[in-house]
Image (cartoon, rainbow, N blue to C red; front, side, top):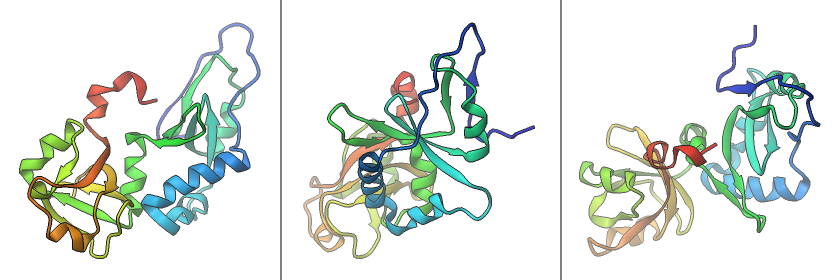
Length: 200
């Protein structure tokens, strides 16, 4: 039997319609990988060219999923209404064509992140409620981190809490006022409780 690392929910009820899971178009792939590269750069190659077993990205209902090819091939037998989701959801395309990463992609972002930020214990709860990271709550950040780039946010125990976008470079952050924003919040693991119904 196939071991499903996330989940593939499928109920064969009545007549099945045409599947809507499909590869990304060239334009969709460009937007998606540009957003992903802000966080993991060239490490994208570790996702698309795996040596253990082949994975792929697939689009379903505006959401991009990362899934084993074997599971994907089995899932095509599910109909339009019966296939709920499969693999790991990386995020969703907006009606305007932009792509938003979801917190469900954190496991992969944290594995391959180029730039990282660590929070003081006093700042953790604030971040997990969706707030930006301010200078007084910053423990440290990767050297030479540029402005407006993607960072994964950790606590002092190296547990990934979410991700965001830098408001300042590493050098600029050293001289900021205690209340100045260092990282703009994008997503955090608190969303599993706050936004459970909209994550997948």
